[in-house]
Image 1 (cartoon, helix red, strand yellow):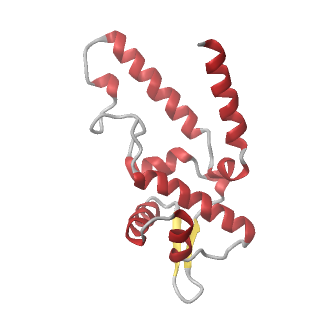
Image 2 (cartoon, rainbow, N blue to C red):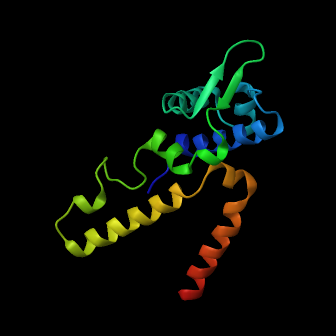
Image 3 (cartoon, rainbow, N blue to C red):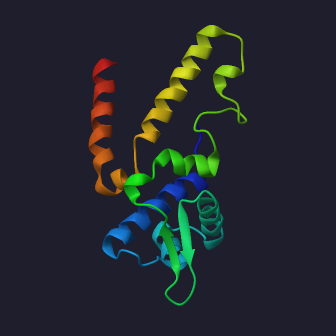
Length: 150
């Protein structure tokens, strides 16, 4: 899996919008505030927001009090949705599932298991989990379990 900068910024934007919604429900976050918070250029941010808008994850409000909002509650948006909107499938090689690329059954099983595992993780983590810090405790358990077995 390789994450693009756009995908990383997409997750950051959704987390920032979720935090803003918790602090001031219904109040849009201006593009300049998003850019300043994420230390990202407005042009890259425009691109990320356009993609997220097309995917139905964010919406804009025009005007003096305008800006960006999530279209759904943060607990209803998964990290998988954000990454898929921006980069497509989480584990693919030129848009093809890795297990479909070769004819070696031993490696096909590995690639399929890796894809299922990563997809399961990303489908199970919401933007609200990131905002609340819930994922941090889960990640420590997973990392700790992996370290104990190696």
